[in-house]
Amino acid sequence: MIAREKIIERSAAEFFEANKAIAGFDNPTRSTYTSVRELVENALDAAEKGGFLPDIEVKIELMSAEEIGELMGIADYQIAEDASSEFIRLTVRDNGIGIRHSDIPKLFGRVLTGSNYGERQSRGRFGLGAKMVLIYSQSTIRVPFEIKSRLALSKKKVNDYTSHYKLFIDIVKNAPEIVEEKRYTGKSKHQLKTHGTEVSVCFAGTWSRSKRYIYEYFEEMAVITPYASFTIYTPDDPETPIIHNRTVEVIPPPPIEMPLHPIGTDINQLKSEISRTKAKTMKEFLKTHFQRIGDKTALEVLRISKISPSKNPIKLDEMELRRLIHEGFTKVKFYPPDGKCLSPLGHENLEAGLRDVYKPEFTCSESRPPSSYSGHAFQVEVAIGYGGENLSPPY
Image (cartoon, helix red, strand yellow):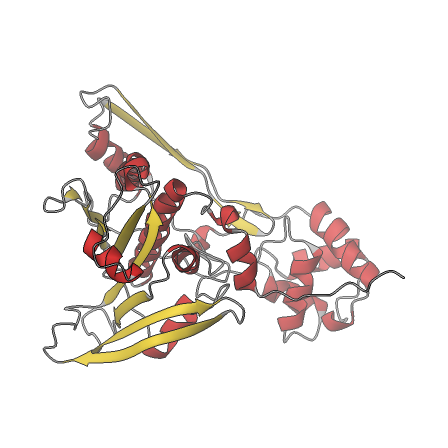
């Protein structure tokens, strides 16, 4: 008799915990680099969303033997000279919009939960970045992820308290496991001076092997985000930070959420749009849920797809869905996507970053018009520098 197989359902957090490599956490060296990158790019997004020129402070510390001994319960712990990994504390502070007190557990403690879902440009999209850093931390040291945040109520006004959480992710439930929750007001030493978020995480990594890539990363970020300033404290010289000052005082315009572009849209995306629509006719549905479709274009798409303009979209059958995607959306010529959902750097910013970091004799840049892939707008920008004295990285 063949034994009956046991069917097991896994949470999203369990999947990514078991497959950390697909998110860049496959070994201590890469995990150290990826942790820095994920938290820094979260910080940049937070500042840019509020229209604030980003001021990012990063502190990378090697935990002392005393700290490690306390975690291990070993009074006289000694760090081996040939240790394959190091215990690292990473802290990233931004001047972004901050996070509502009640939203912090969801945003940091539940995988695939985030504020970047939608048709607009952002560095993070799937609600993975900071959560993967925490999952990796839990798998190596298991020290709570610490978050402090003070909300920006407007450009000039901030919340009167700082939220403070310490938490884990419950891997099985894919839910936050809160260790500590506090609010600091007034002149408390824990009160953040202005709006923004500070996160701190401890994990086993390798600073000695990853530092080259981390230094290069910040150099490259200084090129492509010349409107941001970075202050980086590292174990190589804890008292003297590496500073990349901003070279321009204008932040790119924030992206605006836009509908999908019909080129490259697939059947799953179409079904998803139909499930959310309030439109009662196909003509209205196409005009509302897809950019670059007006009255004339909608009628042409529906004519080619052999679908009545007055048909309710929720009543489309499977053949009509296929015709709309493979006939209507492929045979009609659409204008390129609207670039308002993107936030291009532009020629001046691209070249300013190159000049500041590499000091070339000559710079040149070019930007292509927006295009569409799988219904999403994208834009290619490129810049080159030639010559100059600073021909090799300073690190």
